[in-house]
Length: 124
Image 1 (tube, helix red, strand yellow):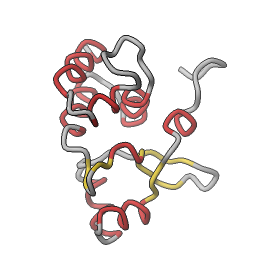
Image 2 (cartoon, one colour; image 1 turned 180 degrees about the vertical axis):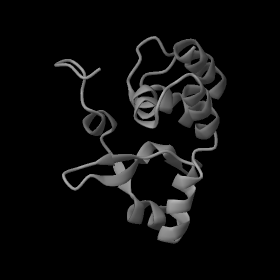
Image 3 (cartoon, rainbow, N blue to C red; image 1 turned 120 degrees about the horizontal axis):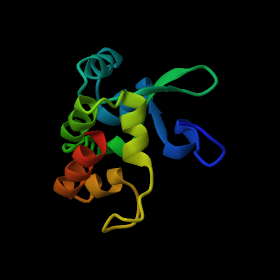
């Protein structure tokens, strides 16, 4: 999937929160954040030279995990996307969207129905 015109996931997402950064952002302990990731309340990837677990910063809004995120990720996962593919799908700009940006920007704007419809179309 990665070719000369496709940015790597780390570059595509841009702003990442490591587990300690996410814990601070959410006001939680490291253990609680790791459990959230294990329980799939939020998805993460390994990034950077040290291959650390991190979450796209765009997945956080208003001091918590974006409420519409996990339902959308579930649709993508059910359609065969792994977590890295789901993150890529959510963060890849799409000029056919009714607002500028990527599906994650639509979710942040409160437009989950359109995003989930597209997720179902792409995943199945």
